[in-house]
Image (cartoon, rainbow, N blue to C red; front, side, top):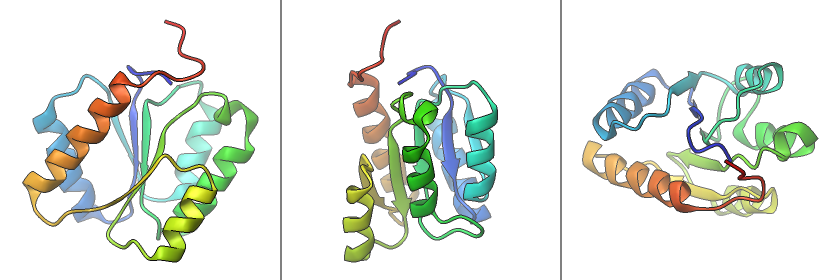
Length: 141
């Protein structure tokens, strides 16, 4: 896990992207924030670049490649799996079947998007600060 790496957000809703962008601006983390509107674009970027993201926040329901399908492809890719990138779902819906499926694919967290800006801010802050303190298997810096 590269704690100084970019934070990847995979979200197809432009309004949610805007809110998350404002939340990260307010939190003022040094990590670059990179948005993708679908899982295929995110996967292509992760495979073709040598970046080591800090965290991936993913919606579940997206066009082309769902969050679950993307997680499975990342987990199946040895190069990406060895980067120990925390993969979290940040979705408006948390159906029990999706939660069970997510954790069966080794997702590190499943969060329901709150409705207020302050609640989103607090959840994101808690998540990022947790992972900033966490040690991963390949953390040698």
